[in-house]
Image (cartoon, rainbow, N blue to C red; front, side, top):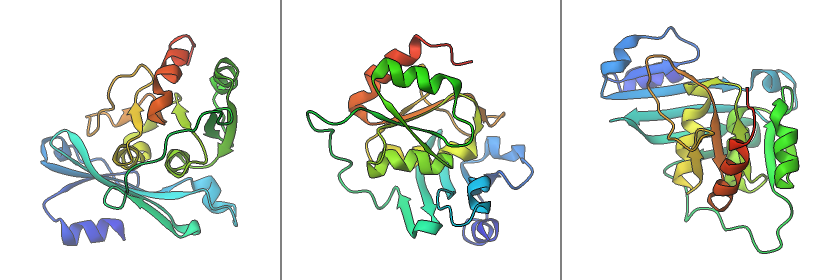
Amino acid sequence: MLAAALAERAPGDAVLSEEAADDHARLSADRVWIIDPLDGTREFSEVPRDDWAVHVALWQGGELVAGAVALPARGVTYGTDEQDEGIPARPEGAPPLRLAVSRSRPPAFAEELGRSMGATTVPMGSAGVKAMSVVDGSSDAYVHAGGQYEWDSAAPVAVAQAYGLHTSRVDGSPLVYNKENPWSPDLVVCRPEVAEELLAALSTMDLG
């Protein structure tokens, strides 16, 4: 459905999708849609779980310029055109930081990171759900260091940026999309006021 809609509405644009062969013509295209029709297949298969998502992002001129993350089972869609003034800052005396982690494959460093920052871990499904948990306030940060593809993070990152969140690689460097190899080693999405502390803690860890 997504492929058909894009072919009809944006026939000159390239598409990078989890569910299609990679056409390297996208590398010279002006606009590239980066899509994941179903992020969180395991959760989708475990009815009535609702922590799966649909990702659609638009890359143009070296940047993510638009994106949407739909959580169909929750009836919610987060988009770069629908964000408000961002998310409120954490109040003084707020509870410990909450780190969104994979419920089925929590990274080995997550427990160590939690201890070093006095944080708690919150297990959940898809990458889109974890990133959107920072947007909706149910977590404060999402860190992934096990590698993922561009379609796993492009739309969540676009939306997170629109809401004023910090997004980067774990070393603080910018995330880059529409690369020849769409594999991305790592990702950080977090509240801006915790970014410095989080990146400092990550810099001391073996994330391999």
